Amino acid sequence: MTDPTPSPPDFAKPQPGPRRPLPWRRAPIVLLLALTAFLLVFRLGTPGLTDRDEASFSEAVREMTVDGDWLTPHFNGATRFDKPPLIYYLMAVPVTVFGLSEFSLRLHSATAGVGLVLLVFLFARRHAGQRAAIYSAGCLAASLGFLVLGRAAITDMTLLLLTTGALFSFFRAYWSPAPSGRPWYRLADVLLALAFLVKGPVGPLAVSLAAAAFLFAAGGFRRYAREARPWLSVLIVLGISLPWFALMLVLHGQAYIDAAMYHTVTRYTSTLGGHGGTVFYYFPVVLLILFPWSLFLPGALREVLTRLPQPIPDPPLSKGGWSYFSRIRTSARLDAVTSFPVFLAIWVIVVFVFFSLSSTRLPHYVAPLFPPAAILVGTRFSRWMEERKETKTPPSLFFQAAAGTVLAVGVAGLDLVYGRYGGLVLREVPSAQAVDLGPWGLTLAAILFIGSAALTWAGFRRTWEAAWLSGVATVSLAFVTVVTAILPAVDAKFLAPGRNLARKAGTLVPPGRAWAIYEVYRPSFVFYSERRVVQIREGEEGHLAARIESGEVSAVLARESRVQRIKEIDPSLSVQDVQGGLALMVRGGGSPR
Image (cartoon, rainbow, N blue to C red):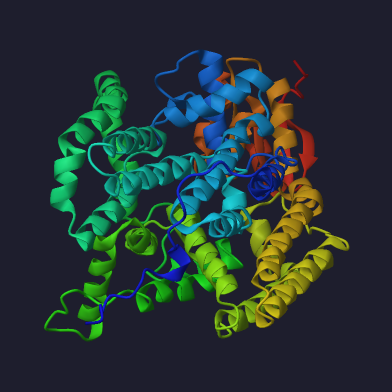
């Protein structure tokens, strides 16, 4: 009788036992890691810190190193309970070594990014082979969202490294014979606890739900309970993360509880900061931040389902959704190789759905799906290479060609769009001026168009190595162009005016005194001035007058159009400098200190 169970999916073929890799086999990953490091570190200090997140985290690190309070984070002289302390400690290490700069404040993210690419390579190589591992790591390294987060002074790349390591450790532990898998479970526990200390509970919760969904599909809850000892996991996570939270509760009481609830539960259940949107918000977001690989992701997910083995025994209801569910359960239960793509697909879907249901939505929230998405696409490219004669032209190639063309045309038309809608930008960011990109805008458009065409052409010819290389080269060249020519131009017009005025205010305002921001408050003003800032909103002019009269405030930053109104509040204020539509006014003219 013929066994109705087909062999495991081709893109996840078991590999031979461990052997000493030949030197030439190490070359691709070494080159890829070098490329990743270059893309993440090259001109890492450009642009200046952006508002609001980068500047807020960086100022908290600056105040922590200056004041010596390594327990309670502060921003602008007030407690900052937005995030636990581990991210500030990690950011402070390069600051201590290299000094305070945009480069040192972002270096922790770049380091975590290189580590994540290596981690994806090692995990994919174990379960899908050398070629698939290289393709997977390359898809991750050459994606827009990864490169942006890997160059930002925020939590997300560090969180991504920790949560990805936790899920990789969980999967390896689950398929390791007991008791050899227990050290991997313990490693997953430690990484989750550290992730908790980086950004709080939401990120670890999302990936924990992905692990739980896999256990449900595999019918593995009893096995997990027997081998992983969940009670020990709880003790480890709480033992590592709970002491700091307990100290905050003791030191700050209800103020900390309110802030913690606001930045976790309220952020998920309510729209904060105007960052809302519908449940479909992340469809275009994922399309953009994983471009060009995102266009191959739907097909990769569909392939996981279509290549599943038939359920054993075949259930009474064998059609429709139940059939897919039964086949998923069968795949998840067979072995590590067969369940590997199912695990990745569950990971992507759970993270996507979890954050789509959140009321507050920001593009980087779905970063935890970057690694599994990259591996799914990378293994798909690897399988296409193995089956290039039998592989039909995937529809995603047509979408990729169309999307690349639209993106290139959009970049080429940036000047036209800015000319029409620039007024809206100027109202939000008064320091913004028309940015003349010169030939670089068209250069970027040409890179995107030619690269997209090369990827599509190589795909139609079934030369998938060339298609993958075209994608990696396109993203790399486009990103270097942006960092070299476009970001400095944007920085000079949008960010530099406010930054320069804040630094000047820091030389005019005595230590221990404050300066005021009228209507145009940005956290970066606090960081670059290294002085406390008093935020004055429209209608609070009386508060400003009182603070100036008391001597608490000796300088004011406002829109240039508001200078006359400020002088009516205090005629002794005189304009010290004007840049980018912003005016710095100082009482009595001021003098550098």
